[in-house]
Image (cartoon, rainbow, N blue to C red; front, side, top):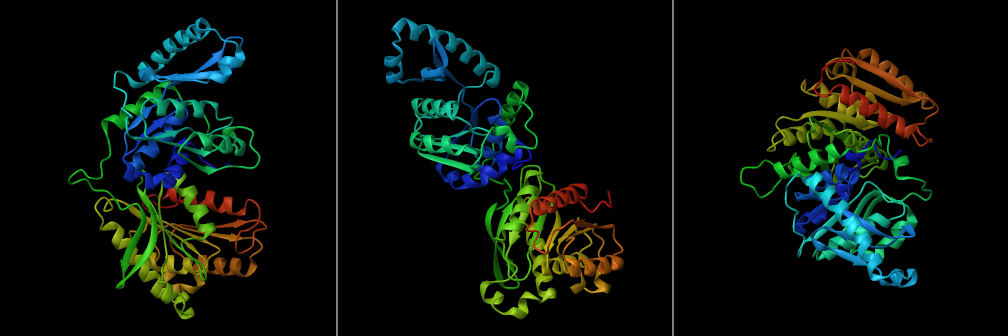
Length: 438
């Protein structure tokens, strides 16, 4: 599985679309499954959300073959070559259009519940669905958006078949897709939860978006600086990537190990899993490039812990950040930094260590950690496993040691990192504010 559910997929997709915020776009979700994805995209882009209702016009004797599509506002797209090859007479076309127009109007009225359609004239239209298999419906939606006056059309989906992506690129101004697997059978295989979206859910999300639009320029509106951030600590600025999904109560800060950085693919994979669960994440470099060149700094646990503490204070001091809990995810030497920082801050919600070196924290500091702590070690990483067993004996907080069978220090074995991500997600969601062991 790649995505936990449509909301998680929407958050992942929204990250890729963040540069579009400056274009003042309109986000258009394809009903029904595309709406939960589009809702997250609209929240991130600070853009209005609308539904794009289209009806494909099928050849009467071969309905699966579309000779065109219609949309609201009189939008109409007809492929003359298919009409010609199919020998369709004007009366045939009119009959199909009349039937589909009635169904289009019925669905649009049900979804919008009396609200007006968001005008697209001169705007960038971001057409969103939960995935693309053949691309026929997505193509029709993009054509209709263009016919409704959009000056630029962007198709955005979390997952799509490679062949469909290749065909669709020529029909839109831009195409953004998180994942294009080489082997593709169905959209649903890439979601853990792919339950059918109901009409009621579509209506509720559209209503919520209309009632609570997010405007970053609204006076007095606290908005966290999402995306790439500069964290001021110790008279330096540390580069990081901050994500805080809507409704998140907890932000997990990542402390990477020696020789790694905020771009670590392993930490990013875990961060994606946490974001899918609605948790905020901050991946940042604990050292500047010049500092990292000095090997002594890489193993300076007090220095690294001080940077984590400073980043925590920075986040809590932001408008909108004062109510967020903070947890730590530490890898290798970063685990020692995470535990050291937690020992000095009783407000720390929870700590997860992946292949960590908690022994570098020191028994006295380990005994002061109050945050529930999860130690995850590979079964084949025998030396580090023994170090974690000994360190756990010094912990007085709620703790657990999880061993991933057959995994080595970097968890490179098939399924090993996914297990780490699932364990971390479960631990942090069970301890959103240091509430004790589950």
